[in-house]
Image (cartoon, rainbow, N blue to C red):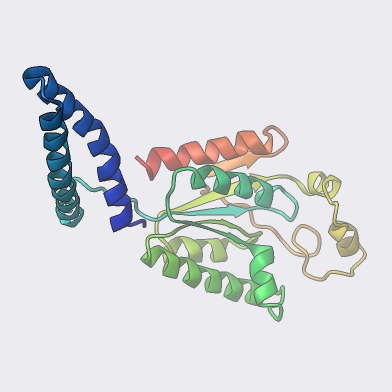
Amino acid sequence: MYRETNLRSIVKGITWRAVATGTTMGIVYLFFGNLELAVATGLLETIAKIGLYWGHEKVWQRVKWGKKRIEPFNIWFTGLPLSGKTTIADLVYKELQKLDIPLERIDSKDVRELFPEVGYTREERIRHIKRIGHLIQTLQRNSISTVCSFVSPYKEARKMIREMVKNNVVVYVKADVETCKKRDYKGVYEKALKGEIPNFTGVSDVYEEPQHAEIVIDTQKLSPQEASKIVVEHIKKYYIK
């Protein structure tokens, strides 16, 4: 979360007092017709009330009454490779950043680069997802929400994430294999079909569709922008009020 610095409080006080002091000087001059008295009164009031304002702000920073904590949430995008998860998740992340809340973006590609030795068998993938769950837990303990995009093809792995983290929102980015093949600018489906990539989800490995996703995005019907809007509106409705 953000903390207001002393310098910011002082600058706020100065700008406000500039307006208030001008008003005070005008009133004094209007009633007494004495410019020197008006200026002296304005300066004295300015010095006194800047100090009072600063102290008043510091006191209210310590008062918890009236503050509402934003509970951290996790948006978990799942779907076949090249279904559009990363594109939509990136758009959601950019929109939520505008709300000025503590937020982190976690994508499977970036994490895989940190742990290149992790394989793609069912057991290895589940262990990998568990590692991500621990990372999200750590961030949430520091009031940081997360936007994650992982193929996460197995029900048990997604269930594990739901049990590990708070306020988990599963977004199923739905697209069939043929649609994903058409979007395959990387050529990974072609390699998988040739047997060059083992345990490839949707070709040589299963993708178990989510049955209880909070949001289902049909990428054949919705553009990435339309999909991101649906997700952001859901988060605003349930977690940022």
